[in-house]
Amino acid sequence: MATEIEELRKIKLKEGYFVVGFPSTGLVGSIATSYLVDLLDMELIGYVSSDKFAPITAIHDYKPMPPARIHYSKKNNLVVLLSETAIPISVSTELAEKILDYSKKIGARMLISLGGISMNEKPNDVYVITSKEEFVKPLLKKTVAKKIKEGATTGVTAVLLSEGFLHDIPVVSFLAESAEEADPKAASNVLKTLSKFLGVPIDTSALEGEARELAKKIKSKLTESRIIKRKMGSMFR
Image (cartoon, rainbow, N blue to C red; front, side, top):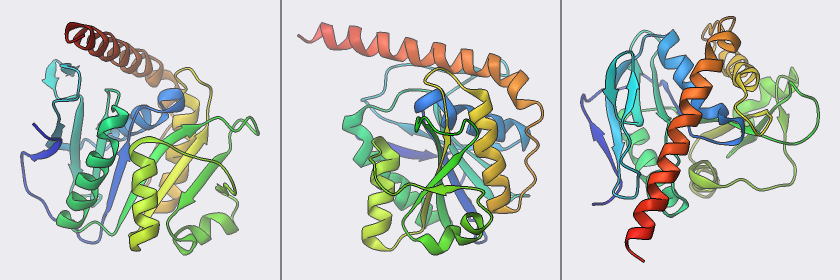
């Protein structure tokens, strides 16, 4: 079975945005998108399936859910893909291609990735990488986010950015300075930047308190998925 985006409901954005968040430094992408989905009361409209994923089911609000899923807010003209499971490097390119295809299919005007990074500079800084600088000029002028001149990024976001640059696709990645451990404060910082970029109010006042529990749960799910993957791998040696 290949990696696929399974649609539970077909939607069309009106020049809206498609936000994605994966486990990264400080679990920032997963914490931020999970909080955003709950805050905006977004509807579950799809999920990601892959035979390379560990067999994990996320339990959220008493309901079993796919660990990598897609939510939609008609009111905010927004789609969010969040993952509470580690994405194997071997799946990154295929999943990025599926995300780009899906983004085009739903009519998203831009793909935005949220994540964490450890630059060892100011603790509240948020950095930006983009396929075209013109997308983020207002944020750069207001010093809301900083550019990264040299470095490297990996995984699904890395493929999205390189494909965006090569094929003139609007892709932006916001990365908050983060600790290596689960970092709700960094998730709050990246959401504040997203709020200014989208012009959508995102109240992060409850995030640092509530997200400590959320971070623990996501960290636990990631640990479980890694253990299962190791066990699965040992069975076929």
